[in-house]
Image 1: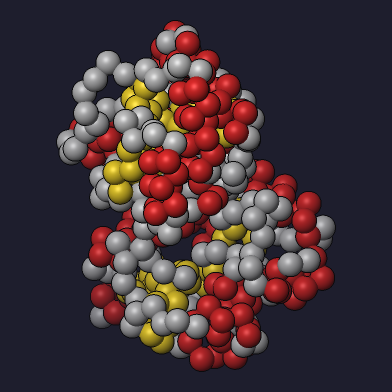
Image 2: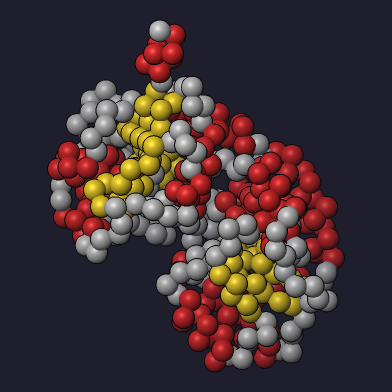
Length: 376
């Protein structure tokens, strides 16, 4: 009888996202669902299609179900684009939940906005700078059409203060907005950093980048920067890029054409990137835009100095440059930052000494508790 009573009071929570594979949204969703108290929460992750790296790592108590398709089906995104929200919700969401979370402000938000479950608390989890990178869905293109989606939510939850500011800047109307920074599992990161593959030894400055090989991450700009450095006779460094994506062939061709094969290495997706990061001298982020890049926090936890282009969330991580170098978000800005650390090794040592202060501030438990407050 006691067991049945315990189960009956669990809060049923739905996380809806496109896929459960290798991206930042997927990773933070995995960290949260695996660490929420299973005695308090009955958790379901529903995806537009089934399978993926993060899905393989989910705890047994978490239910993972596909929308309808067991694998990616061509045209599913178009289906999301053209069907009205209420029809999408009715077709694909069949459980009764206490909390329904759209784990992105694109297709997932459109579906949850059509919820017919009046008792559920509806949360839109905003993981992007909506000014720099708006959704491809027509409903989110301007304030008037977006309002028909966002007004259906009880709470908007951006992952950084800048994300919240950009949201209000773009849409111009007031919503209950609560900033909750994504939690990072500190102990897990540190443990994984201690064992695993590492970068090759050498006298060159070892620079690591981590991210999907897509235009947003700016690796094409990094190749141009390395070409400029080579033209100026600077080659005392190595860059290793962890990640896979649709731009791999283009990047490989560009590296080869510019004769940078000995400087830039694409080492693919790695299940444990943390041991690679730990063996690097510097972590470099070259993104055109971000929301609150977790990999910057992961590098700080590991103790590796950071250089990062000025995107949403960077100033919050690096505290206006105290714990890492914030670069102008351009080819020239990336060039100047790399040139400066290559010409003056003391800069890296200064950041390394300061990082300890920041490490002590990062708490997975604190951030997870803030997320739980939103659920309640």
